[in-house]
Length: 427
Image (cartoon, rainbow, N blue to C red; front, side):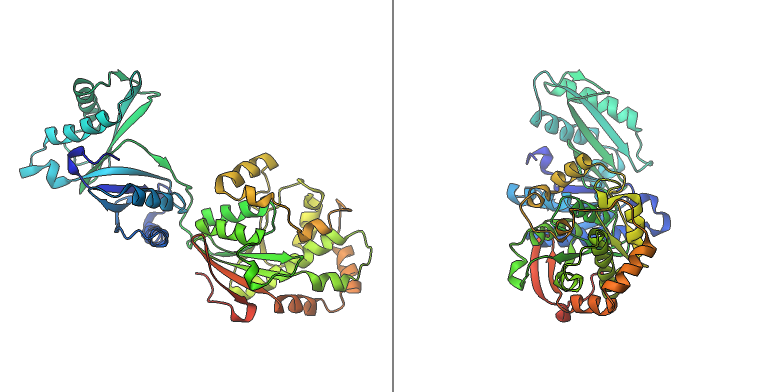
């Protein structure tokens, strides 16, 4: 942003209209959003104050912030769940536009005109939008838009006004304590602040779908941990370079604080002993859910999350989803159930997991994907499980005993260890 505009201080204004719908509880949501934003900024070595006021947060960047610092701060804001939109704005305190209690129209015009001059584009159209949050302000929004629009046309090279589809829009937001002037509204990821919607354990594979499902739960305010069943040996050093570890690192930019639990699938494979039943894919998914349920109970998660999309593959037919669900008592969330593959891929590209997910990776589910039956029944599979796995609870416990974990914060792996050195539960 330009450094002129009357040398007013720069603020990053953060909005979350969904929080304003929370009634008496919205104060808790704003506090959580502020805390999460502070965490993201700290990770990027940005120490600017974050203040809260009516229906917004504001990151105070000073009169002439370094461009590099401002870019890092904007990147941080763009990845915080609960941020619907944000703008780089110049702030004028109320006392500055009401010296002696009288509205200083000249001062307001100076700021808008300078901003318009800096952004002039030959032949382009413009519009002015005034949002009068403080209804005590002496001029109505329409009056200000007419007055300031005329000032821009008479004092700059902008001449074309287009109220329906302008090439450039200038904004003035009027609050009780200050006015904010800006020329862009950047889109955030929306949703609710992480930590306001409970704690879930997401089943994370090396594929495209499950990372998107994890992102969507974080976007809705859930604290997200991940559970991955590995077909290969994983050591503590593998977290940094593995496909799943890199996906987790990327996702933690949105989930803020998360753990990845990696469980070996070898105990299940040995118990199956190569027996050909024709039901291996669904048997494995039922085992996956049971291990996930046991792990969720130990870490305090209230639900499992999967990347299932109805009928996308044979194991995700409605019959097979029902049969898999009946293996566990815990709630299973499927945020992608009504999405098609193209929609999921587009979202994976947006959040930065797609290119990692398409790398070659030996996924457990793929090992059993050859002969998937599209219709299964819980009763028949339960009888088969009793015959194949007489000590099912012991099988689950042996698998969990060999679990490794990695803890991620805001896009970085910060620690890794064994299951029995597990860090505190994510709040």
